Image (cartoon, rainbow, N blue to C red; front, side, top):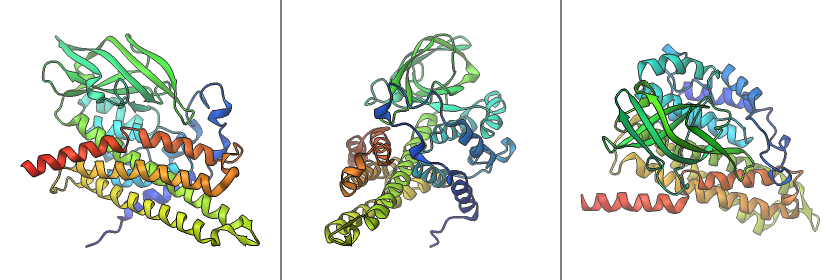
Length: 378
């Protein structure tokens, strides 16, 4: 069996390495040293470079100027972006565009997709629900009134929402009882934002929808659309955690190889080597479970459990693994790891954000337990 990546997937990651090679995570102010967000906007210059490298259109069909690749290719690019803490909505915009392409109206596809692939339109997703602990599709109610949909509810911690052109909002349809996806433009009447700041120092937003009215073409009412989008977001988050963890372990390896005690590099001490080896094992487990999840959603391949089971396993490893990696890195760096002139503290803040994004390990353990119980009973 061939487990190697395709030529197209490899080309995507090589392009990503070239784009992110010059990005320095220590070039952004520390969250601890700023009164508010680290910046008002995401990195537009980097966003333009990503677009020029055709990395925003990876998942789009050729008719929209895309490469027609899969979640594996996107996750490989996301992995590279996280190594340098790239401040761009690459995951959210790519996942939202794929949802529109797969389930959206022809009008929405024609209006959005080619422009999104060129970076001219920025999309994001409200995926955290009302509190961050409940289902995002339960936080907003959508009802049909003739030829329009009316939305009411609250979504919290929406990433990049102040700078995105369109927010994809999952909502519970009162008619069908299933989740729909509403495409809400920034500044739309009835949509109000309240600023929130992430542990990363990035600007998030609480999105309040008060009788927001949308045309039928702007609401995706297809069974499975939200679940598919949610699965891709969760898998992409695992890819970000893996890339961040690899970046941190690389920093730790370099530091402990140069830092000397008693005339020897501390990396040669058994206690240091054992801890680093444990974190390397964490990263390899994170990688194996990530590719399993990405392969399931890319190919639609069957298994004993639905793909959500593999995604839950991947997110459990991503959440717990990235936390252990950054904690060990802080320990092995000593006091130097707390120096705000050194970028490790930023990686720690981003790791905590990724650990909790779309649910911590405990939430996905519960999901996995429910799937296993249902499988046993079935």
